[in-house]
Amino acid sequence: MPDLHPQALARACAEAMFARDAASQGLGIELLDAGPGSARLAMTVRADMIQGHGTCHGGFLFALADSAFAFACNSHDEATVALGCSIDYVAAAKRGDQLVASATELSRRGRTGNYDVRIENQHGELIALFHGKSYKVRGSVLAPENTHD
Image (tube, rainbow, N blue to C red; front, side):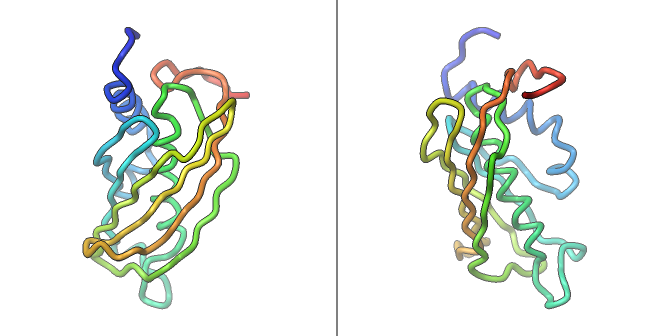
């Protein structure tokens, strides 16, 4: 692949990953934006995402944040996986809410990186805060290998 401007590279990586990401697509997640070390994804809370208390199940919020984290940490065309993640649920998301997860790279050095993700609803209200630590494995996002170490 020819050398690309970092913004164009990040977008190409995001589009390539999204095309292979059946999990995110199955949840109705949309790729809004991608840049070097950043990503914005959206998801509408569906009826099948509601748990017994009438709000969005935390697992779906985690999945949205984890996907945003994945797109951000793979934006440099270096295959990267999660080393560890945590989430704090701040407010409930309800059926029909349009959620946006915004991931930001805090650090990337050697084989590891740190990323924060904010999930907000359509009113700009904070729903969850996620932190992920990444680990660079062998290979490229745009030319994936079959195995990772």
